[in-house]
Image 1 (cartoon, rainbow, N blue to C red):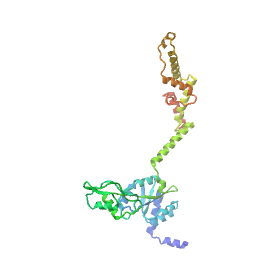
Image 2 (image 1 turned 60 degrees about the horizontal axis):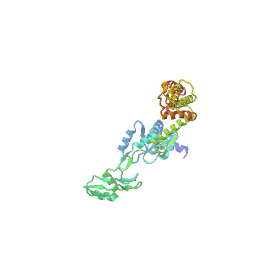
Image 3 (image 1 turned 180 degrees about the vertical axis):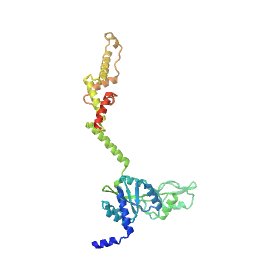
Image 4 (image 1 turned 180 degrees about the horizontal axis):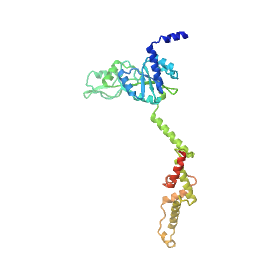
Length: 346
């Protein structure tokens, strides 16, 4: 098409169409994320309810497909990639939420609805086992005709087992649509189906947005815990790990002090307790009490767990990190030091 022909064609575009394209362009520029949604088969009343449900979070904008295509082409910020998704009964949807939040919101807003004759089953249609609540009559024959295992029992029509009456992808017959309507079975979901959404220069399709939020959160929490463990084990201080590193270092320093019998104010009480236990153990092995000072006569040996704890202190202190009891000692001086160094890394 020549330039003159193009200009002439533009000049013949009705004013109302030009105004509509401008409004659509303005709409596209107002939101961080803009997508195409399929509204096929949604009754107007339900569509209005969906618009109200989106209020404050997203906005739906309907127009002619040709005008929507012209609007995204003229905006030209990558939005032209949405053109291939414009077809059939569609509309623009805009939001300042991220695409994942928009997809989740649209999926959660879908509601169950009856299916009509001639429609394609979105999934297997099953008439469940149980009492239909319908009095005996011709309806039992209608159930059997569509493939349900139905009988008259105990004064009503009952379905004796779960009956798959139509498989996914098959067309619904008029008879089946009537039966499902009589039973109040609504086998399809009605809602805005997101075809694609453009956000921050990236085009997303529904398959990329359908993530399990709980599983994703668990993965992030697991990765955070692994990173924290790595930081602690590598002695790499961060604002998240410095307190644990200080507690670990305090415990290790105290273990060294006990093993080397350093008379530090923090260690002296434990050294005295250790010496007292050793003295009691030695006194308990002396058979002649007359050989003992009066205050040590009748002294019993320390309990076995205490002896094992002392052995562990002597034999393993050099190679093992302090246990939780050492790390959790309530010592005001230690806590004050931890807070002081912690502030440096915060």
